[in-house]
Length: 137
Picture 1 (tube, rainbow, N blue to C red):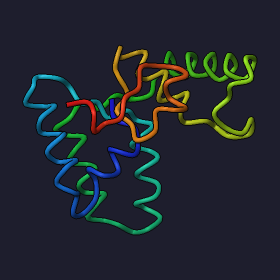
Picture 2 (cartoon, rainbow, N blue to C red):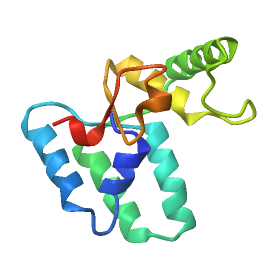
Picture 3 (cartoon, rainbow, N blue to C red):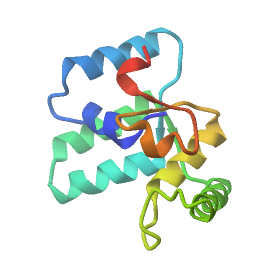
C-alpha cells in the first residue's frame, strides 16, 4: 500500500527512474500495489492547489492501473480506535486537533492486510507493518 510519499513521486510530471523501476518490479513480481484513498486525497489536494494538471492526470491514470482502495465506514471506525489508543499510550502521531491521515492510512492497510510502502517508517510503524518503499523490491 502506497503512502503519500511514493504516490506523490509516481504522480510527478517527470518521475525519477528509481520509483518507476521499483513500481514496475513490484507489479512484475505479482504483488499488488494499492492506492489508499487517504494518500490520493493528500496528493490530489496539493496538485489541485498548485494547478499541476498533468500530474493530476497521471494520478488518475495510476488509479486505473493499480488497485484503488476507498475509505469505508469500517476503515474510519478502526482509524478512530487507533487514534484514541495512540493518545492513551502517549504515542500520538499528530496534534489532537488534526484529522491524522496516518491513522486512516494505517486502518486502510489493516483492512487490506498490506505493508505500507513509505518514506518514513517512524509514525506508520506504530500501527502497521511499514517499510521504506525503496527496500521493498
